[in-house]
Each structure stands twice: as C-alpha cells, then as structure tokens.
Length: 511
Ligand code: C2O
Ligand code: CU
Ligand code: CU
Figure 1 (tube, rainbow, N blue to C red):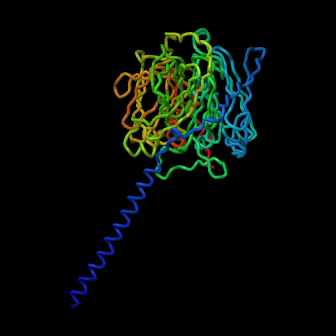
Figure 2 (figure 1 turned 45 degrees about the vertical axis):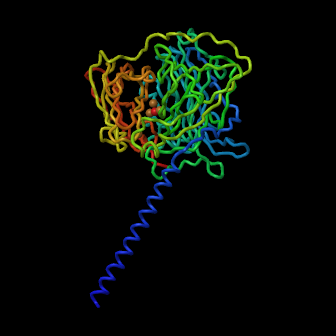
Figure 3 (figure 1 turned 90 degrees about the vertical axis):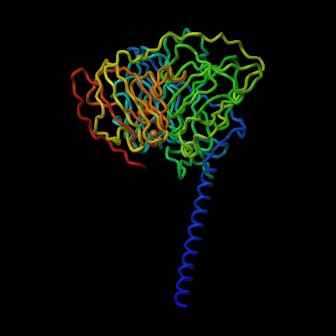
C-alpha cells in the first residue's frame, strides 16, 4: 500500500516534471522560432518611392589670402520631418539632419571651424583622410559643449569620396545615429580630366545610406534586437535622410557615390533588374580601371563609386540583397545577413542627355603593393577586443615608423561579423583568405569587411608627420563594437623614436 502510493507519488512528480520540461521546451522553441522569423527584414517590393531624394548642399567655404579654404560646421540639435507632419528629434551639422558635403582639391590647405552647440562633448573625425594625428578628430580631440575646434591640414591624396562623423569614445554609435555624418569629396587634376559624370547632384549623386526605425511618435527607435550582437538594425533604409527616395536622372550615365553610414548594417548593393554597373572607385579613390559588376558589398564606413547606364524613360531600383558570406545561420539571421532593402529608385527622363563613354583606365593606384613592406603585424578580431585587449585611451598598441610600408593581417576570430578600419592611411588588400581579392577590393581602401572565418592581408604606408604623443585609431566600424572597445591606437614616429605617453583622456560615459 504505502509502497504503491509512494510509487504513484514518484510517478506524479515525474509526470509534472516532464510536462513542465515539455512546456518550457515548446515555449522556448516557439519563442526562438518567433524571434527567428521576426528577425528577418525586407522592404523589397514594398517601397513607394514617393519622395524626391534630398541632395546634401555643398558646404560654403571662403578662401583666405594664404590659400586656405575655410569651412564652418556647427553640431546642433534639430527636428526633421522624415514623415510629413511628424517631426523627429535629430542632430545635424549646420542643419537638422546629416551635414553638407565638403569639397576640396588635392594640394589645397583646408581648415574647418567646428562648433559644438550640443549639450554633450563630441568630436568630428575625417574618415579616410590622410592628416596629422592632432587633426584627426578621434577620441583624443574632444570638443566640449559650447566649445570649438579648428583643425587644418593640406589635402595630400587622390580624388575620393570620404566622410566625416563624430568619434567620442563610447558614444559614437549614438552620435552618428542621431544624424551627425556628412560627405567629404576630394578632387584632383586627373579626376577633373577623366570622362566620368561629375555634376554634383545631377549625374554625380551622393547616396548616404542609413537604416532606421521609428516608434509610434515618429521618434528614432534605436533599440537593439534581443539576439542581435552587431548593434542596431533598422527595419527600413533612407538615403540622404529621405525615406522612400527617388532620383530623377537626365543623363545616360549616372555616378552614385555610395556611403554606408549605417552603424551596424552591411549592404550588398545591386539593381532590381540585375543590370550591371561599372565600379569606378572604392574608399580611397578611383580604381585602375572600371570593373563591370552586378553587386558591391559595403560594410559600415565603406564607400563605392559606381556608374549606371539608364535608358530613355527607364527605371531601376538600387537594392540591397541578402548576403551569402555572413558566417553561420545565426549571424545571417540575427546580424542582418538575410535582410534586403529597396533603397533608391532611379527614374530616367524621357529624353536623356548623351554621356561620353566612360574612361577605360583611370591610372595607377597610389597604395603600396607590399613589396617594400618592412614589417608585419597581426590583428585578431573579437567582440571583446582586438588582440584580446579592449580599447584603453591611455595605451599605445602599435608604434610604426614614418615613411615605411607594413603588412597587416586581420583575422576574424569569433565568427561575429566585423570590419577593420585604419585611420590616416589608405591600404591595398593583398589577399582575402590567401587568394587574390575580388574587383571591389582591388582599389584604395580604409575599411574592409571581415566576416566570420575570413582573414585579410593589407599593405599600407605611413607617410604622415611623426607625432609620438598623439595616436590614430584602428577599429571595427560596427559602431556598437567600437564603442564597446573593439579599437586600438597607433602612433607614427621617426625612425628609432619611441611612443610617448598619451593621456588616458576624456572618458566618455554612455548617455
Ligand atoms: Cu569612420 Cu575611426 O572612423
Ligand atoms: Cu576613420
Ligand atoms: Cu565588430
């Protein structure tokens, strides 16, 4: 009797336990399935394209007696109606959202007066620019609220599509998301002579792509997905701050200067009708010759200049396709690899102006080929830090000698999508996983995608002035990772010189 009842008690407990386990398993499995299905985002076929694309104005400048071109940039709060009648609180340079396009010529002296009217400290970094470390606008050049900063340098690099954005340590993601970003276009004698579309806003169009999400009050929703480990991923895209944009085109050939100004999203750009385009430039300027492609992938911070041929009255949509190099299924789904977007519609006029045939060759690259490399370095990328060290503003990680070429090997060690950006230089990608790089990685680059399992080998030359006390940064340009400490510092010194001591600096808390 007692034995029987104790047996049945055991059985009852077992049954209860088993059903509990089943319920939990079903719930979590179902929960996972729900999270899994919910994580995939696509705006393909859903965009209306009913807003004319905004073109960021060219920044006004004055030229001083000594030839210095002077720009003014004011960081400020604003409000922008991305959706008619529904204002969104924003930040911008000189305006409500984003900033004007700065433009200067190789050889010119430039100076930018930066005013910070925000109520927190920030910086302005010139991404892709070769300049002295003190002018770089990294985390050591903080501009306090109400203060100003006036970096100046001489433009000494080829024509290119560069950009500018804040770089306060620990808060870069937020400052960029709120709208602080703009293009910086460089010209040179050669680029002016080549047959390439070059009328700004007409057949030479800036395309600043960001992914965004709005809450019910039209405020930005910068919340991160429960399982997302690369940072914020929006549910739609905008170009130059325009949702559902279209651009009217009046010329047979149109050049798009694509900038991925998103904080974590990687795009694989192509056209909805599968048309080819000519890739003419990468981060640091023009390729040696145009490459006929159907896709070009851009991770955060990267740029590409492409030229597209239009037909009279034709339309085509710039689309971002799902990616096939995103690592495992978890990354593909939760870090945005499977997502797709209809980004921008190009609408040709009924009668297009004839465009001259695209130049066949653009001349030699100015990035080293690695043959004169004097030293190699290795960088292992993990979300927890580069080479197992999280960023420390008071530590110099690498010391390089001015005037020398080095070969840097960068490997993804944790399977999470990352990229790698180096300040001050443009590099050449020598190898991707031991092989010759694809066409889109054969130009001058300052940022390169390094997804799970990938190793890249880069050659770069450090030509800037030596400054043992002021570091440049290298980091993952997925801004959450950067803010969390996937960043390191290097100084350029004269031969035989040692790195100085850097102030641990202005630690910028998270706001
Ligand atoms: Cu686009 Cu360290 O920056
Ligand atoms: Cu940079
Ligand atoms: Cu990363």
